[in-house]
Picture 1 (cartoon, rainbow, N blue to C red):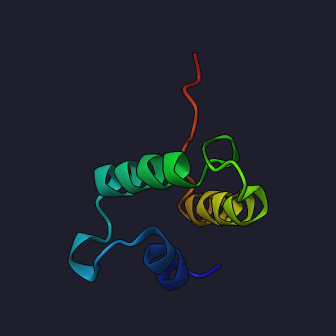
Picture 2: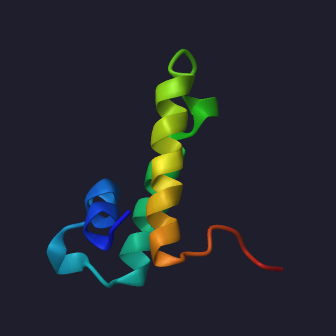
Length: 68
């Protein structure tokens, strides 16, 4: 996935690109929206979108969990 594809998938406008807080907020919002447990009856579609969100964030190497 390229950076442009990742920004597009996360729904981030070109003016906001490069802002780490915007990336993290978008990741959290979409992760909750597409989490398979929150989409009963649409698990397959939600799982595919959820994996896409994680692939986009991996492109930016965003840590998705705290390292405590």
